[in-house]
Amino acid sequence: MSAEFNLNNILRENIAKLKPYTSARDEYSGEGEVFLDANENPLGSATQHHHNRYPDPLQIDLKTEISKIKNVPVEQIFLGNGSDEAIDLVFRAFCNPGKDNVITVPPTYGMYQVLADINDVEVKQVSLTEDYQLDVDGILGAVTENTKVIFICTPNNPTGNSIKSEDIFKILDNFNGIVFVDEAYIDFTSAPSFTNELKNYPNLVVIQTFSKAWGLAAIRLGMAYASEEIIGIFNKVKFPYNISDVTQEAAMEAVKNVAKTEKMVKEVLAQRDVLENELKQLADVEKVYPTDANFLLVKIKEAHQKYNDLIAQKIIVRDRSKVLLCEDSLRITIGTAEENTRLINALKTL
Ligand SMILES: *Cc1c(COP(=O)(O)O)cnc(C)c1O
Image 1 (cartoon, rainbow, N blue to C red):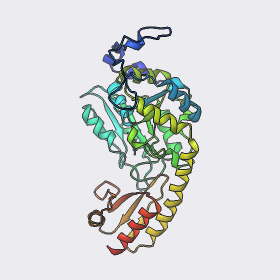
Image 2 (image 1 turned 120 degrees about the vertical axis):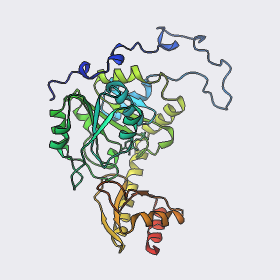
Image 3 (image 1 turned 45 degrees about the horizontal axis):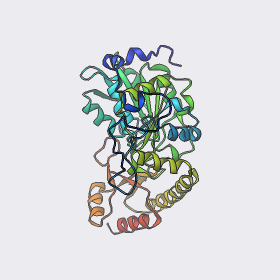
Image 4 (image 1 turned 135 degrees about the vertical axis):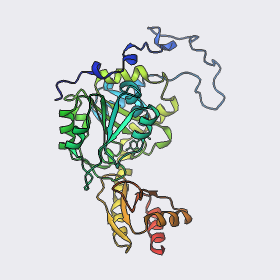
Protein backbone atom coordinates (compact mmCIF):
# COMPACT_ATOMS: atom_id res chain seq x y z
CA MET A 1 0.00 0.00 0.00
CA SER A 2 1.39 3.39 -0.92
CA ALA A 3 0.70 4.96 2.45
CA GLU A 4 1.84 8.45 1.58
CA PHE A 5 -0.33 8.90 -1.50
CA ASN A 6 -2.47 12.00 -1.20
CA LEU A 7 -4.48 12.95 -4.23
CA ASN A 8 -4.54 16.62 -3.29
CA ASN A 9 -0.73 16.73 -3.39
CA ILE A 10 -0.60 15.72 -7.04
CA LEU A 11 -3.68 17.46 -8.42
CA ARG A 12 -3.03 20.61 -10.47
CA GLU A 13 -4.14 23.70 -8.57
CA ASN A 14 -6.35 24.98 -11.42
CA ILE A 15 -8.16 21.64 -11.52
CA ALA A 16 -8.61 21.56 -7.75
CA LYS A 17 -10.22 25.02 -8.00
CA LEU A 18 -12.17 24.27 -11.19
CA LYS A 19 -15.88 24.94 -11.15
CA PRO A 20 -17.14 22.46 -13.77
CA TYR A 21 -19.69 23.28 -16.46
CA THR A 22 -23.19 22.44 -15.33
CA SER A 23 -25.44 21.28 -18.14
CA ALA A 24 -29.16 22.04 -18.36
CA ARG A 25 -29.97 18.54 -17.14
CA ASP A 26 -27.74 18.87 -14.06
CA GLU A 27 -29.63 21.83 -12.73
CA TYR A 28 -32.95 20.34 -11.68
CA SER A 29 -34.04 17.34 -9.69
CA GLY A 30 -37.32 15.50 -10.06
CA GLU A 31 -39.10 14.05 -13.08
CA GLY A 32 -39.37 16.14 -16.24
CA GLU A 33 -41.89 15.68 -19.03
CA VAL A 34 -41.51 18.81 -21.12
CA PHE A 35 -37.88 19.61 -21.87
CA LEU A 36 -37.43 23.23 -22.89
CA ASP A 37 -34.10 23.64 -21.14
CA ALA A 38 -31.35 22.61 -23.55
CA ASN A 39 -32.15 24.27 -26.88
CA GLU A 40 -32.65 20.90 -28.59
CA ASN A 41 -34.84 20.37 -31.64
CA PRO A 42 -38.27 19.22 -30.37
CA LEU A 43 -39.36 17.84 -33.77
CA GLY A 44 -36.79 15.07 -34.19
CA SER A 45 -33.62 14.66 -36.19
CA ALA A 46 -32.44 15.17 -39.75
CA THR A 47 -31.96 11.41 -39.95
CA GLN A 48 -34.30 8.43 -39.68
CA HIS A 49 -33.18 7.81 -36.13
CA HIS A 50 -33.85 10.11 -33.21
CA HIS A 51 -30.75 11.74 -31.79
CA ASN A 52 -32.27 15.09 -30.91
CA ARG A 53 -31.83 14.86 -27.11
CA TYR A 54 -28.47 15.21 -25.36
CA PRO A 55 -27.20 11.87 -24.00
CA ASP A 56 -26.65 10.99 -20.34
CA PRO A 57 -23.42 12.82 -19.44
CA LEU A 58 -22.42 10.14 -16.92
CA GLN A 59 -23.69 7.12 -18.94
CA ILE A 60 -25.18 5.51 -15.82
CA ASP A 61 -27.17 2.73 -17.55
CA LEU A 62 -24.15 1.58 -19.52
CA LYS A 63 -21.80 1.84 -16.54
CA THR A 64 -24.26 -0.24 -14.51
CA GLU A 65 -23.91 -3.09 -17.02
CA ILE A 66 -20.12 -2.70 -17.25
CA SER A 67 -19.97 -2.70 -13.46
CA LYS A 68 -21.64 -6.13 -13.37
CA ILE A 69 -19.24 -7.60 -15.93
CA LYS A 70 -16.08 -6.07 -14.50
CA ASN A 71 -17.02 -6.20 -10.84
CA VAL A 72 -16.10 -2.54 -10.28
CA PRO A 73 -18.58 -0.10 -8.65
CA VAL A 74 -20.24 2.40 -11.01
CA GLU A 75 -18.62 5.29 -9.11
CA GLN A 76 -15.19 3.90 -9.96
CA ILE A 77 -15.80 3.75 -13.72
CA PHE A 78 -15.10 6.51 -16.25
CA LEU A 79 -16.06 6.17 -19.91
CA GLY A 80 -14.06 8.02 -22.54
CA ASN A 81 -14.11 8.74 -26.27
CA GLY A 82 -11.66 5.87 -26.68
CA SER A 83 -9.44 4.98 -23.74
CA ASP A 84 -7.03 7.56 -25.17
CA GLU A 85 -9.33 10.17 -23.60
CA ALA A 86 -8.47 8.81 -20.15
CA ILE A 87 -4.73 9.03 -20.93
CA ASP A 88 -5.21 12.68 -21.92
CA LEU A 89 -7.24 13.41 -18.78
CA VAL A 90 -4.44 12.12 -16.55
CA PHE A 91 -2.13 14.72 -18.11
CA ARG A 92 -4.69 17.50 -17.91
CA ALA A 93 -5.64 16.77 -14.31
CA PHE A 94 -2.27 15.98 -12.74
CA CYS A 95 0.59 17.32 -14.86
CA ASN A 96 1.56 20.98 -14.84
CA PRO A 97 2.80 21.87 -18.35
CA GLY A 98 6.48 22.75 -18.51
CA LYS A 99 7.06 21.62 -14.95
CA ASP A 100 5.96 18.05 -14.18
CA ASN A 101 7.10 14.82 -15.81
CA VAL A 102 5.88 11.26 -16.42
CA ILE A 103 7.75 7.99 -16.93
CA THR A 104 7.18 5.62 -19.85
CA VAL A 105 8.85 2.26 -20.45
CA PRO A 106 9.57 1.88 -24.18
CA PRO A 107 9.01 0.07 -26.43
CA THR A 108 5.38 0.81 -25.59
CA TYR A 109 2.17 2.41 -26.82
CA GLY A 110 2.93 5.65 -28.65
CA MET A 111 0.05 7.74 -27.36
CA TYR A 112 1.60 8.33 -23.92
CA GLN A 113 4.40 10.31 -25.58
CA VAL A 114 2.07 12.11 -28.03
CA LEU A 115 -0.33 13.21 -25.31
CA ALA A 116 2.60 14.26 -23.11
CA ASP A 117 3.90 16.39 -26.00
CA ILE A 118 0.48 17.93 -26.60
CA ASN A 119 0.21 18.77 -22.91
CA ASP A 120 3.82 20.04 -22.79
CA VAL A 121 4.83 17.48 -20.18
CA GLU A 122 8.33 15.98 -20.05
CA VAL A 123 8.65 12.23 -20.61
CA LYS A 124 11.41 10.28 -18.88
CA GLN A 125 12.01 7.00 -20.68
CA VAL A 126 13.28 3.94 -18.85
CA SER A 127 13.47 1.19 -21.45
CA LEU A 128 12.24 -2.31 -20.81
CA THR A 129 14.84 -5.04 -20.25
CA GLU A 130 15.94 -7.32 -23.13
CA ASP A 131 13.13 -9.73 -22.24
CA TYR A 132 10.59 -6.89 -22.32
CA GLN A 133 10.08 -6.63 -18.55
CA LEU A 134 10.23 -3.63 -16.22
CA ASP A 135 13.55 -2.27 -14.99
CA VAL A 136 11.99 -1.61 -11.59
CA ASP A 137 15.08 -0.04 -10.00
CA GLY A 138 15.66 2.10 -13.09
CA ILE A 139 12.06 3.33 -13.02
CA LEU A 140 12.04 4.13 -9.31
CA GLY A 141 15.47 5.73 -9.68
CA ALA A 142 14.16 8.04 -12.40
CA VAL A 143 11.35 9.39 -10.20
CA THR A 144 11.75 13.05 -9.19
CA GLU A 145 9.55 15.20 -6.99
CA ASN A 146 7.76 16.33 -10.15
CA THR A 147 7.01 12.83 -11.46
CA LYS A 148 3.24 12.48 -11.54
CA VAL A 149 2.52 9.34 -13.57
CA ILE A 150 4.19 6.04 -14.51
CA PHE A 151 2.64 4.37 -17.58
CA ILE A 152 2.73 0.56 -17.79
CA CYS A 153 1.05 -1.39 -20.59
CA THR A 154 0.21 -5.07 -20.02
CA PRO A 155 -0.02 -7.03 -22.26
CA ASN A 156 2.41 -4.57 -23.82
CA ASN A 157 2.01 -3.03 -27.26
CA PRO A 158 4.03 -3.61 -29.51
CA THR A 159 5.84 -6.52 -27.83
CA GLY A 160 2.70 -8.52 -26.93
CA ASN A 161 3.95 -9.97 -23.64
CA SER A 162 2.46 -9.46 -20.20
CA ILE A 163 4.43 -7.51 -17.63
CA LYS A 164 5.18 -9.44 -14.41
CA SER A 165 2.55 -8.44 -11.88
CA GLU A 166 5.02 -8.58 -8.97
CA ASP A 167 7.00 -5.81 -10.68
CA ILE A 168 3.88 -3.66 -11.09
CA PHE A 169 3.18 -4.18 -7.38
CA LYS A 170 6.70 -2.97 -6.56
CA ILE A 171 6.01 0.22 -8.52
CA LEU A 172 2.62 0.66 -6.82
CA ASP A 173 4.19 0.15 -3.39
CA ASN A 174 7.05 2.57 -3.93
CA PHE A 175 5.67 5.46 -5.98
CA ASN A 176 3.39 8.16 -4.64
CA GLY A 177 2.03 9.38 -7.95
CA ILE A 178 -0.40 7.74 -10.35
CA VAL A 179 0.44 4.24 -11.61
CA PHE A 180 -1.37 3.93 -14.92
CA VAL A 181 -1.92 0.32 -16.04
CA ASP A 182 -3.09 0.02 -19.66
CA GLU A 183 -5.00 -3.23 -20.16
CA ALA A 184 -6.18 -2.67 -23.75
CA TYR A 185 -5.42 -6.34 -24.51
CA ILE A 186 -6.54 -7.91 -21.20
CA ASP A 187 -9.40 -9.81 -22.87
CA PHE A 188 -6.90 -11.97 -24.76
CA THR A 189 -5.21 -13.27 -21.58
CA SER A 190 -6.23 -15.27 -18.57
CA ALA A 191 -4.23 -12.93 -16.33
CA PRO A 192 -6.29 -11.24 -13.60
CA SER A 193 -7.05 -7.56 -14.14
CA PHE A 194 -5.47 -4.93 -11.91
CA THR A 195 -9.02 -3.67 -11.29
CA ASN A 196 -8.95 -6.25 -8.47
CA GLU A 197 -6.33 -4.06 -6.75
CA LEU A 198 -8.25 -0.77 -6.81
CA LYS A 199 -9.31 -1.23 -3.19
CA ASN A 200 -5.66 -1.55 -2.13
CA TYR A 201 -4.13 1.25 -4.18
CA PRO A 202 -5.64 4.76 -4.26
CA ASN A 203 -2.97 5.74 -6.81
CA LEU A 204 -3.94 3.10 -9.40
CA VAL A 205 -5.67 3.91 -12.71
CA VAL A 206 -6.52 0.99 -15.02
CA ILE A 207 -7.77 1.42 -18.59
CA GLN A 208 -9.45 -1.03 -20.95
CA THR A 209 -11.18 -0.54 -24.29
CA PHE A 210 -14.02 -1.68 -26.53
CA SER A 211 -11.71 -1.24 -29.55
CA LYS A 212 -9.93 -4.58 -29.57
CA ALA A 213 -11.59 -7.78 -28.26
CA TRP A 214 -15.10 -6.32 -28.37
CA GLY A 215 -14.71 -5.40 -32.04
CA LEU A 216 -16.00 -1.85 -31.57
CA ALA A 217 -13.07 0.36 -32.56
CA ALA A 218 -15.37 2.60 -34.59
CA ILE A 219 -17.70 3.60 -31.76
CA ARG A 220 -14.78 5.07 -29.77
CA LEU A 221 -15.33 3.82 -26.24
CA GLY A 222 -12.82 3.09 -23.52
CA MET A 223 -13.04 2.69 -19.77
CA ALA A 224 -10.88 3.89 -16.91
CA TYR A 225 -11.18 2.44 -13.43
CA ALA A 226 -9.81 4.19 -10.35
CA SER A 227 -10.76 5.46 -6.90
CA GLU A 228 -14.05 7.34 -6.66
CA GLU A 229 -12.02 10.52 -6.07
CA ILE A 230 -9.96 10.17 -9.24
CA ILE A 231 -13.05 9.27 -11.32
CA GLY A 232 -14.72 12.37 -9.86
CA ILE A 233 -11.83 14.48 -11.15
CA PHE A 234 -12.06 12.90 -14.63
CA ASN A 235 -15.81 13.64 -14.68
CA LYS A 236 -15.15 17.24 -13.72
CA VAL A 237 -12.54 17.79 -16.45
CA LYS A 238 -14.09 15.84 -19.37
CA PHE A 239 -16.36 17.40 -21.98
CA PRO A 240 -19.92 17.28 -20.63
CA TYR A 241 -21.35 14.91 -23.27
CA ASN A 242 -18.20 12.98 -24.22
CA ILE A 243 -19.99 9.73 -25.14
CA SER A 244 -22.68 9.96 -27.83
CA ASP A 245 -25.99 8.13 -27.53
CA VAL A 246 -25.08 6.12 -30.65
CA THR A 247 -21.97 4.86 -28.85
CA GLN A 248 -23.81 4.18 -25.59
CA GLU A 249 -26.47 2.16 -27.43
CA ALA A 250 -23.96 0.11 -29.42
CA ALA A 251 -21.95 -0.67 -26.27
CA MET A 252 -25.14 -1.59 -24.42
CA GLU A 253 -25.89 -4.19 -27.09
CA ALA A 254 -22.35 -5.58 -26.72
CA VAL A 255 -22.33 -5.86 -22.94
CA LYS A 256 -25.67 -7.69 -23.01
CA ASN A 257 -24.12 -10.29 -25.32
CA VAL A 258 -20.75 -11.04 -23.73
CA ALA A 259 -20.86 -14.52 -25.26
CA LYS A 260 -20.31 -13.06 -28.72
CA THR A 261 -17.10 -11.34 -27.65
CA GLU A 262 -15.89 -14.47 -25.87
CA LYS A 263 -16.51 -16.51 -29.01
CA MET A 264 -14.60 -14.02 -31.18
CA VAL A 265 -11.69 -13.96 -28.74
CA LYS A 266 -11.47 -17.78 -28.84
CA GLU A 267 -11.42 -17.70 -32.63
CA VAL A 268 -8.71 -15.02 -32.73
CA LEU A 269 -6.60 -17.01 -30.25
CA ALA A 270 -6.98 -20.18 -32.33
CA GLN A 271 -5.92 -18.24 -35.43
CA ARG A 272 -3.00 -16.80 -33.48
CA ASP A 273 -1.65 -20.32 -32.89
CA VAL A 274 -2.03 -21.17 -36.57
CA LEU A 275 -0.32 -18.00 -37.73
CA GLU A 276 2.48 -18.37 -35.21
CA ASN A 277 3.24 -21.90 -36.43
CA GLU A 278 3.16 -20.89 -40.08
CA LEU A 279 5.45 -17.92 -39.46
CA LYS A 280 7.97 -20.04 -37.57
CA GLN A 281 8.35 -22.25 -40.63
CA LEU A 282 9.41 -19.36 -42.87
CA ALA A 283 13.16 -19.22 -43.53
CA ASP A 284 13.39 -15.45 -43.02
CA VAL A 285 11.56 -15.43 -39.69
CA GLU A 286 14.13 -15.29 -36.90
CA LYS A 287 11.80 -15.04 -33.95
CA VAL A 288 8.10 -14.91 -33.11
CA TYR A 289 7.93 -13.31 -29.69
CA PRO A 290 5.63 -14.78 -27.03
CA THR A 291 2.33 -12.90 -26.98
CA ASP A 292 -0.71 -12.48 -24.75
CA ALA A 293 -2.45 -10.16 -27.22
CA ASN A 294 -4.16 -10.27 -30.62
CA PHE A 295 -0.95 -9.56 -32.49
CA LEU A 296 2.50 -11.03 -32.96
CA LEU A 297 5.84 -9.25 -32.92
CA VAL A 298 7.96 -11.00 -35.52
CA LYS A 299 11.68 -10.61 -36.07
CA ILE A 300 12.28 -11.13 -39.76
CA LYS A 301 15.16 -10.57 -42.20
CA GLU A 302 14.85 -7.30 -44.16
CA ALA A 303 11.82 -6.28 -42.09
CA HIS A 304 11.44 -2.81 -43.58
CA GLN A 305 11.74 -4.14 -47.15
CA LYS A 306 9.18 -6.86 -46.41
CA TYR A 307 6.83 -4.24 -45.00
CA ASN A 308 6.95 -2.35 -48.29
CA ASP A 309 6.68 -5.50 -50.39
CA LEU A 310 3.58 -6.52 -48.44
CA ILE A 311 2.01 -3.12 -49.08
CA ALA A 312 2.58 -3.70 -52.79
CA GLN A 313 0.40 -6.79 -52.35
CA LYS A 314 -2.16 -4.68 -50.45
CA ILE A 315 -1.32 -6.35 -47.12
CA ILE A 316 -0.67 -3.85 -44.35
CA VAL A 317 1.25 -4.75 -41.18
CA ARG A 318 2.99 -2.43 -38.73
CA ASP A 319 6.66 -1.67 -39.31
CA ARG A 320 8.38 -1.56 -35.92
CA SER A 321 11.86 -2.16 -37.35
CA LYS A 322 13.18 1.23 -36.25
CA VAL A 323 11.80 0.98 -32.71
CA LEU A 324 14.20 0.48 -29.79
CA LEU A 325 14.43 -3.22 -28.82
CA CYS A 326 12.18 -4.15 -31.76
CA GLU A 327 14.85 -3.86 -34.46
CA ASP A 328 14.02 -5.80 -37.64
CA SER A 329 10.52 -6.57 -36.40
CA LEU A 330 7.02 -6.31 -37.78
CA ARG A 331 3.89 -6.21 -35.64
CA ILE A 332 1.22 -8.36 -37.22
CA THR A 333 -2.41 -8.27 -36.08
CA ILE A 334 -4.21 -11.64 -36.15
CA GLY A 335 -6.67 -11.60 -39.05
CA THR A 336 -9.28 -14.06 -40.27
CA ALA A 337 -8.11 -17.49 -41.46
CA GLU A 338 -8.23 -16.23 -45.07
CA GLU A 339 -6.30 -13.04 -44.30
CA ASN A 340 -3.62 -14.93 -42.40
CA THR A 341 -3.23 -17.40 -45.25
CA ARG A 342 -2.88 -14.54 -47.71
CA LEU A 343 -0.16 -13.01 -45.53
CA ILE A 344 1.76 -16.28 -45.26
CA ASN A 345 1.51 -16.93 -49.01
CA ALA A 346 2.74 -13.41 -49.71
CA LEU A 347 5.69 -13.77 -47.32
CA LYS A 348 6.64 -17.06 -49.00
CA THR A 349 7.15 -15.22 -52.28
CA LEU A 350 9.28 -12.42 -50.79
C1 LIG B 1 -5.55 0.29 -28.91
C2 LIG B 1 -4.90 0.73 -27.65
C3 LIG B 1 -5.50 1.65 -26.76
C4 LIG B 1 -6.73 2.39 -26.95
O1 LIG B 1 -7.47 2.56 -27.84
P1 LIG B 1 -8.85 3.34 -27.90
O2 LIG B 1 -9.34 2.92 -29.22
O3 LIG B 1 -8.54 4.80 -27.78
O4 LIG B 1 -9.69 2.84 -26.75
C5 LIG B 1 -4.88 1.94 -25.56
N1 LIG B 1 -3.72 1.39 -25.25
C6 LIG B 1 -3.13 0.50 -26.05
C7 LIG B 1 -1.87 -0.09 -25.61
C8 LIG B 1 -3.67 0.17 -27.27
O5 LIG B 1 -3.02 -0.68 -28.07
